[in-house]
Image (cartoon, rainbow, N blue to C red; front, top):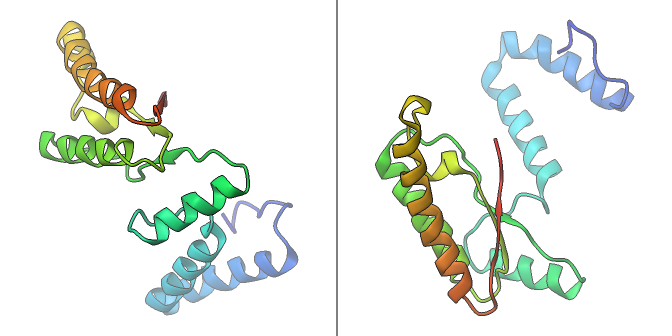
Length: 152
């Protein structure tokens, strides 16, 4: 990034920090990585919220009081196996079941591992089964939960 030219939208301080990190990471990668992680967490605070209660519940309540609807999206999209996909489905269903969640996003690739475009009909059946499970849970939830099918 530094060698290719830093974006003009970055502040002079951010450009200087990135240049220092590019040099410093060669000499002391672990401390530079720690600073980068800390900065990313600080920048994403308020956008990326841990799903652990009570912090998650407090955040949802505060946003709702401010007039916002929250789109709950589970991060970590790489699903390597069926066990992982089943765990992701359970996590999503747990969010749908919460009375303080009324909007979730889901990607098909997060629900079904190893999709094969050559087995189209079989894969559509597998995807539809998972989506029906989510849609039924969302329709049964009170209040109803909107399910946003996030396309890759």
